[in-house]
Image 1: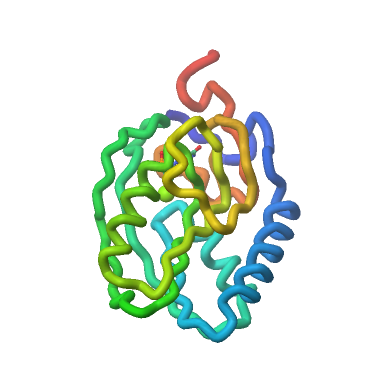
Image 2: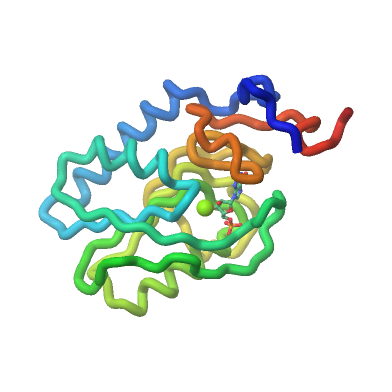
Length: 187
Ligand code: IMP
Ligand code: MG
């Protein structure tokens, strides 16, 4: 893989601009603030993809809340879901009695979230809900529908705003699609 010195040169198409992203995060935060007033909210960010979304969302919530993180293995460096879910870092805090909101970057096959929901439900949270920035909305068993969703996107591999390809491009401020040449194709 060759990453350009200016990462923007590797982007074929911007799917969601920074302005549109930020506006959507603001409206999601408003809905969450309304629903979680008076509750014991714990945001659980799924590392590493959800970091940008998690930070922007948390900053827009006026509620008192706790923050924790989990790390889950999914893709390695490939662009296809392996279906294998492994916990690399578990929560630091007890979630018993808390209103847990999982903050996830993207739902592709839905395997990661389905596993996570089952795993966390066993620890008796008061409630367990998902906020996802993106959903590829594939044909899949509708096991997990996020209560809060930023955008439905086409079934393409995207990078930026936390999402990576081989650990790069997470710091792009928008959601974009890479040029095929970055994958070593099309040239
Ligand atoms: P799922 O288990 O197939 O739903 O995969 C979810 C995880 O795969 C996400 O949390 C991402 O980390 C990763 N992922 C899925 N699609 C993309 C993509 O288009 N770009 C970057 N990462 C992705
Ligand atoms: Mg992820």
